[in-house]
Image 1 (tube, rainbow, N blue to C red):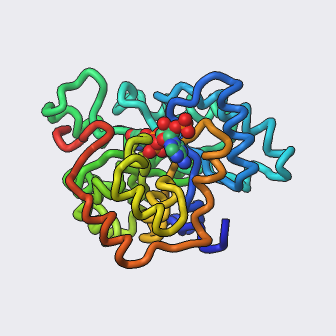
Image 2: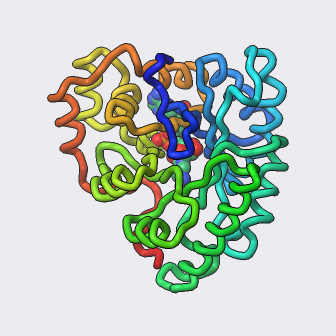
Length: 287
Ligand code: NAP
């Protein structure tokens, strides 16, 4: 990857623009093979979560494979997330459990995974109190250095506004669904104005968007693959991405984004696909 391939968070720390998504990677062998291929391809950031159930496997694979690739813990950037069942009172213990599952001394970036709490109805205002409780716990662990940066995921503009008005430590990052069919213009602008890094997940529409006829046509026009076009569309706008693959060829393909660019016409055609479509859950109804 080139030197233009990172962003600086509001903590002053650099984060790679292309990170490796790990949702649905499971079992020691699958995780190990994917992490080996990802390190070989140049990925230095890894995205996991308590609910993915693979923190321990990811940590083991990284500890074992870093020396093989001539790397140390300081060379990589690990993100994990607080599960919705641990929102509120359970947040501190859950975050420390993630640190321990990964077998690391600290996590580079720790996010509240979802604005709601498991078992609490989406419209119930208790969700707001639990989010505040979780954030206070994350702030404390950030001050202790266990979580080097803290942020949120799947927050809407309204959730962001409340957090930004009440926090002591502002979020470093918002991770959310973002691709040509879901451009999230208002949310992106709010993040830009507040110095919060806006990071995309499901850039490939969970593998569905690579089959879209417009994406395929743009890819043909620039002699790249549909996945590269979708990922380039985001990184060209300065938005970090987290492609997931269990296939070493695709893992490599998804990092080869910095030796071409999309022209204005291609960007416009892709952005015109925005119809507000979520491939993942829509968080807009969580109170
Ligand atoms: P994604 O990256 O949009 O798509 C992954 C799917 O695309 C997999 O089925 C993969 O299959 C396929 N794929 C990967 N590379 C490809 C290529 N070059 N050509 C064709 N198909 C390709 O979906 P995602 O896993 O939902 O999102 C990525 C990451 O973001 C997750 O792994 C996770 O780390 C994070 N995420 C976070 C949240 C959140 O709530 N914060 C939600 C969703 C995702 P193969 O594995 O067979 O290659």
